[in-house]
Image (cartoon, rainbow, N blue to C red; front, side, top):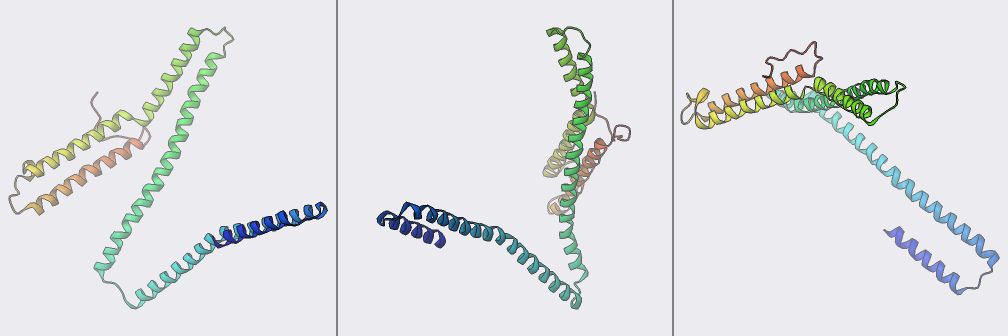
Length: 240
Protein backbone atom coordinates (compact mmCIF):
# COMPACT_ATOMS: atom_id res chain seq x y z
CA UNK A 1 0.00 0.00 0.00
CA UNK A 2 2.82 2.37 0.88
CA UNK A 3 4.55 1.60 -2.41
CA UNK A 4 1.35 2.36 -4.32
CA UNK A 5 0.95 5.72 -2.56
CA UNK A 6 4.60 6.59 -3.23
CA UNK A 7 4.23 5.68 -6.90
CA UNK A 8 1.09 7.81 -7.28
CA UNK A 9 2.86 10.74 -5.57
CA UNK A 10 5.86 10.36 -7.91
CA UNK A 11 3.60 10.19 -10.96
CA UNK A 12 1.67 13.29 -9.83
CA UNK A 13 4.86 15.26 -9.24
CA UNK A 14 6.32 14.28 -12.60
CA UNK A 15 3.10 15.21 -14.38
CA UNK A 16 2.95 18.59 -12.68
CA UNK A 17 6.62 19.25 -13.57
CA UNK A 18 6.09 18.37 -17.23
CA UNK A 19 2.97 20.54 -17.36
CA UNK A 20 4.61 23.65 -15.95
CA UNK A 21 8.12 23.40 -17.38
CA UNK A 22 9.03 24.03 -20.95
CA UNK A 23 10.90 20.99 -22.21
CA UNK A 24 12.21 20.51 -25.67
CA UNK A 25 10.38 17.82 -27.60
CA UNK A 26 13.76 16.33 -28.47
CA UNK A 27 14.43 15.63 -24.80
CA UNK A 28 10.86 14.69 -23.85
CA UNK A 29 10.79 11.47 -25.90
CA UNK A 30 13.88 9.84 -24.31
CA UNK A 31 12.66 10.93 -20.87
CA UNK A 32 9.33 9.19 -21.36
CA UNK A 33 11.09 6.03 -22.57
CA UNK A 34 13.42 6.05 -19.56
CA UNK A 35 10.49 6.61 -17.21
CA UNK A 36 8.57 3.69 -18.75
CA UNK A 37 11.60 1.43 -18.36
CA UNK A 38 11.93 2.44 -14.71
CA UNK A 39 8.25 1.67 -14.09
CA UNK A 40 8.61 -1.73 -15.80
CA UNK A 41 11.69 -2.58 -13.73
CA UNK A 42 9.99 -1.60 -10.49
CA UNK A 43 6.84 -3.56 -11.42
CA UNK A 44 8.90 -6.63 -12.34
CA UNK A 45 10.75 -6.47 -9.04
CA UNK A 46 7.51 -6.20 -7.07
CA UNK A 47 5.90 -9.07 -9.00
CA UNK A 48 8.95 -11.27 -8.53
CA UNK A 49 8.88 -10.56 -4.82
CA UNK A 50 5.20 -11.46 -4.61
CA UNK A 51 5.69 -14.71 -6.54
CA UNK A 52 8.65 -15.82 -4.52
CA UNK A 53 7.11 -15.05 -1.15
CA UNK A 54 4.72 -18.06 -1.06
CA UNK A 55 7.59 -20.40 -1.96
CA UNK A 56 9.72 -18.97 0.81
CA UNK A 57 6.81 -19.31 3.23
CA UNK A 58 6.28 -22.92 2.14
CA UNK A 59 9.94 -23.72 2.71
CA UNK A 60 9.80 -22.16 6.14
CA UNK A 61 6.67 -24.14 7.01
CA UNK A 62 8.29 -27.38 5.84
CA UNK A 63 11.40 -26.66 7.92
CA UNK A 64 9.26 -25.88 10.96
CA UNK A 65 7.28 -29.09 10.47
CA UNK A 66 10.48 -31.13 10.17
CA UNK A 67 11.80 -29.59 13.40
CA UNK A 68 8.57 -30.43 15.20
CA UNK A 69 8.66 -34.01 13.95
CA UNK A 70 12.24 -34.35 15.16
CA UNK A 71 11.20 -32.98 18.56
CA UNK A 72 8.38 -35.53 18.75
CA UNK A 73 10.81 -38.34 17.92
CA UNK A 74 13.19 -37.22 20.64
CA UNK A 75 10.36 -37.05 23.18
CA UNK A 76 9.11 -40.51 22.20
CA UNK A 77 12.65 -41.89 22.51
CA UNK A 78 12.81 -40.90 26.19
CA UNK A 79 9.13 -41.35 27.04
CA UNK A 80 7.36 -44.40 25.60
CA UNK A 81 3.56 -43.91 25.47
CA UNK A 82 1.40 -46.51 27.12
CA UNK A 83 -0.36 -49.20 25.15
CA UNK A 84 -3.72 -47.45 25.51
CA UNK A 85 -2.22 -44.21 24.21
CA UNK A 86 -0.65 -45.95 21.24
CA UNK A 87 -3.94 -47.63 20.43
CA UNK A 88 -5.78 -44.33 20.69
CA UNK A 89 -3.26 -42.66 18.39
CA UNK A 90 -3.51 -45.52 15.93
CA UNK A 91 -7.31 -45.25 15.99
CA UNK A 92 -7.01 -41.58 15.01
CA UNK A 93 -4.51 -42.41 12.25
CA UNK A 94 -6.83 -45.02 10.76
CA UNK A 95 -9.26 -42.30 9.64
CA UNK A 96 -6.51 -40.72 7.51
CA UNK A 97 -5.64 -44.13 5.99
CA UNK A 98 -9.26 -44.80 5.11
CA UNK A 99 -9.68 -41.35 3.55
CA UNK A 100 -6.53 -41.79 1.46
CA UNK A 101 -7.61 -45.22 0.22
CA UNK A 102 -11.09 -43.95 -0.63
CA UNK A 103 -9.66 -40.95 -2.50
CA UNK A 104 -7.35 -43.16 -4.56
CA UNK A 105 -10.17 -45.62 -5.21
CA UNK A 106 -12.50 -42.88 -6.48
CA UNK A 107 -9.76 -41.47 -8.69
CA UNK A 108 -8.96 -44.78 -10.38
CA UNK A 109 -12.67 -45.68 -10.65
CA UNK A 110 -13.39 -42.40 -12.44
CA UNK A 111 -10.50 -42.93 -14.85
CA UNK A 112 -11.64 -46.48 -15.55
CA UNK A 113 -15.27 -45.46 -16.08
CA UNK A 114 -14.28 -42.68 -18.49
CA UNK A 115 -12.08 -45.00 -20.54
CA UNK A 116 -14.75 -47.70 -20.50
CA UNK A 117 -17.35 -45.18 -21.67
CA UNK A 118 -15.03 -44.09 -24.49
CA UNK A 119 -14.57 -47.72 -25.54
CA UNK A 120 -18.30 -48.43 -25.57
CA UNK A 121 -19.23 -45.25 -27.45
CA UNK A 122 -16.36 -45.79 -29.90
CA UNK A 123 -17.44 -49.37 -30.60
CA UNK A 124 -21.05 -48.35 -31.21
CA UNK A 125 -19.95 -45.39 -33.36
CA UNK A 126 -17.71 -47.65 -35.46
CA UNK A 127 -20.59 -50.02 -36.14
CA UNK A 128 -22.89 -47.11 -36.98
CA UNK A 129 -20.42 -45.51 -39.40
CA UNK A 130 -19.85 -48.86 -41.08
CA UNK A 131 -23.62 -49.22 -41.51
CA UNK A 132 -23.86 -45.78 -43.12
CA UNK A 133 -20.93 -46.38 -45.48
CA UNK A 134 -22.80 -48.69 -47.85
CA UNK A 135 -22.82 -46.52 -50.94
CA UNK A 136 -26.59 -46.32 -50.94
CA UNK A 137 -28.52 -43.09 -50.99
CA UNK A 138 -29.29 -41.87 -47.50
CA UNK A 139 -32.88 -41.13 -46.65
CA UNK A 140 -34.38 -39.77 -43.48
CA UNK A 141 -35.73 -43.23 -42.67
CA UNK A 142 -32.33 -44.91 -42.90
CA UNK A 143 -30.59 -42.13 -40.97
CA UNK A 144 -33.25 -42.23 -38.23
CA UNK A 145 -32.99 -46.00 -37.99
CA UNK A 146 -29.20 -45.82 -37.71
CA UNK A 147 -29.31 -43.11 -35.03
CA UNK A 148 -31.89 -45.04 -32.97
CA UNK A 149 -29.85 -48.23 -33.28
CA UNK A 150 -26.75 -46.35 -32.12
CA UNK A 151 -28.59 -44.95 -29.08
CA UNK A 152 -30.00 -48.35 -28.15
CA UNK A 153 -26.58 -49.98 -28.46
CA UNK A 154 -24.91 -47.37 -26.26
CA UNK A 155 -27.71 -47.59 -23.65
CA UNK A 156 -27.47 -51.40 -23.58
CA UNK A 157 -23.70 -51.24 -23.14
CA UNK A 158 -23.87 -48.76 -20.25
CA UNK A 159 -26.73 -50.66 -18.59
CA UNK A 160 -24.88 -53.95 -18.79
CA UNK A 161 -21.60 -52.50 -17.56
CA UNK A 162 -22.72 -50.23 -14.72
CA UNK A 163 -25.66 -52.44 -13.54
CA UNK A 164 -27.85 -49.53 -12.46
CA UNK A 165 -30.80 -51.78 -11.64
CA UNK A 166 -28.78 -54.03 -9.33
CA UNK A 167 -27.18 -51.06 -7.59
CA UNK A 168 -30.59 -49.47 -6.99
CA UNK A 169 -32.02 -52.71 -5.65
CA UNK A 170 -29.20 -53.39 -3.19
CA UNK A 171 -29.11 -49.78 -1.95
CA UNK A 172 -32.86 -49.82 -1.32
CA UNK A 173 -32.55 -53.21 0.40
CA UNK A 174 -29.86 -51.87 2.73
CA UNK A 175 -31.86 -48.71 3.44
CA UNK A 176 -34.93 -50.79 4.33
CA UNK A 177 -32.90 -53.03 6.62
CA UNK A 178 -31.37 -50.09 8.47
CA UNK A 179 -34.78 -48.43 8.77
CA UNK A 180 -36.18 -51.67 10.21
CA UNK A 181 -33.39 -51.77 12.77
CA UNK A 182 -34.02 -48.14 13.74
CA UNK A 183 -37.75 -48.74 14.23
CA UNK A 184 -37.08 -51.91 16.21
CA UNK A 185 -34.63 -50.30 18.63
CA UNK A 186 -36.92 -47.30 19.09
CA UNK A 187 -40.00 -49.40 19.81
CA UNK A 188 -38.22 -52.20 21.67
CA UNK A 189 -39.44 -54.98 19.38
CA UNK A 190 -37.83 -57.76 17.36
CA UNK A 191 -34.20 -58.32 18.25
CA UNK A 192 -34.43 -55.60 20.92
CA UNK A 193 -37.48 -56.88 22.82
CA UNK A 194 -35.28 -58.47 25.48
CA UNK A 195 -33.89 -55.10 26.59
CA UNK A 196 -35.96 -53.33 29.19
CA UNK A 197 -35.70 -49.93 30.89
CA UNK A 198 -32.18 -49.09 31.96
CA UNK A 199 -30.63 -51.28 29.26
CA UNK A 200 -30.49 -48.66 26.52
CA UNK A 201 -26.70 -48.93 26.33
CA UNK A 202 -26.85 -52.65 25.53
CA UNK A 203 -29.60 -52.05 22.98
CA UNK A 204 -27.62 -49.29 21.27
CA UNK A 205 -24.53 -51.49 21.25
CA UNK A 206 -26.42 -54.26 19.48
CA UNK A 207 -28.08 -51.73 17.15
CA UNK A 208 -24.70 -50.30 16.14
CA UNK A 209 -23.31 -53.80 15.53
CA UNK A 210 -26.25 -54.83 13.35
CA UNK A 211 -26.28 -51.59 11.34
CA UNK A 212 -22.55 -51.90 10.68
CA UNK A 213 -23.21 -55.44 9.51
CA UNK A 214 -25.74 -54.16 6.96
CA UNK A 215 -23.32 -51.49 5.78
CA UNK A 216 -20.50 -54.01 5.41
CA UNK A 217 -22.80 -56.25 3.41
CA UNK A 218 -23.65 -53.33 1.12
CA UNK A 219 -19.96 -52.55 0.60
CA UNK A 220 -19.32 -56.19 -0.28
CA UNK A 221 -22.14 -56.15 -2.83
CA UNK A 222 -20.78 -52.91 -4.26
CA UNK A 223 -17.37 -54.50 -4.73
CA UNK A 224 -18.92 -57.50 -6.43
CA UNK A 225 -20.83 -55.27 -8.83
CA UNK A 226 -17.62 -53.44 -9.70
CA UNK A 227 -15.97 -56.71 -10.70
CA UNK A 228 -16.12 -58.08 -14.26
CA UNK A 229 -19.29 -59.94 -15.17
CA UNK A 230 -17.57 -63.34 -15.21
CA UNK A 231 -16.23 -62.87 -11.66
CA UNK A 232 -19.01 -60.98 -9.85
CA UNK A 233 -21.43 -63.28 -8.04
CA UNK A 234 -23.73 -61.15 -5.84
CA UNK A 235 -25.10 -62.84 -2.77
CA UNK A 236 -28.69 -62.30 -3.91
CA UNK A 237 -30.02 -61.25 -7.26
CA UNK A 238 -32.79 -58.63 -7.53
CA UNK A 239 -36.16 -59.95 -8.55
CA UNK A 240 -37.21 -59.50 -12.14
